[in-house]
Length: 114
Ligand code: HEC
Ligand code: HEC
Ligand code: HEC
Image (cartoon, rainbow, N blue to C red; front, top):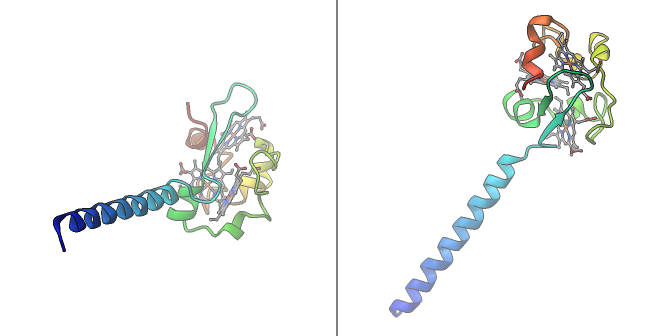
C-alpha cells in the first residue's frame, strides 16, 4: 500500500461522511409538510404552522391531522378564525385544554406573529 492509496481512501471516507451529514440535516429540516405560513386576511399578523413542533416535540402522528382535520396541501383547508370556536382545524386541539386556545384573547399572539 502506498501513500497515494491511503490518501485516496481518506478522501473517499470524508466525502461519504459529508453526504451522510447532509442527508441527516435535510431530513431534520423538513418534517412532514414543513413550515407553512398563512397571511390571514385583514390586519392580523401572519401565522406559521410548524410540522416540526407538532410532530417531533408534541409527538402528533400524521394521521392525527391528515386527513380528517387537514388536507395534505397548503391552503386546501379553507380555515377561518370562526371555525376554530367550533372545534375545527387548529381548534380541534387548540381548545385551551389539549393546547393553548385558538379563541382566547390572551393567546392570539401565540399564532399571529409579526
Ligand atoms: C398537528 C396537525 C398536523 C400533523 C400532526 C401533521 N400535519 Fe401535515 N399539515 C398540517 C396542516 C395544517 C397542513 C396545511 C393544510 C392547509 O393549509 O390546508 C399540512 C400540510 C401537509 C403537507 C402539504 C404541504 C404543502 O406545502 O402543501 C404535507 C406533505 C404534509 N402535511 C405531510 C405530513 C406528514 C408526512 C405528517 C406526519 C409526519 C404530517 N403532515 C403531520 C397539519 C399537520
Ligand atoms: C392556533 C393558532 C391561532 C390562534 C391562537 C389564533 N389564530 Fe387567528 N388564524 C389562525 C389561522 C391558521 C388562520 C387562517 C389563516 C388563513 O387561512 O389565511 C387565522 C385567521 C385569522 C383572521 C383572518 C380572518 C378570518 O376570520 O379567518 C383573523 C382576523 C384572526 N385569525 C384573528 C385572531 C384573533 C383575534 C385571535 C385571538 C382571539 C386569533 N386569531 C388566534 C390561527 C390562529
Ligand atoms: C393534533 C392536535 C393539534 C392541532 C390540530 C394543531 N395543534 Fe398546534 N399545538 C398542539 C400542541 C399539543 C401544542 C403544544 C402545547 C401548547 O403549547 O399548548 C401546539 C403548539 C402550537 C404552537 C406553538 C409552537 C410552535 O410551533 O410555534 C403553534 C404556533 C401552533 N401550535 C399552531 C397551530 C396552528 C396554526 C394549527 C392549525 C393550522 C395547529 N397548531 C393545529 C397541538 C395541535
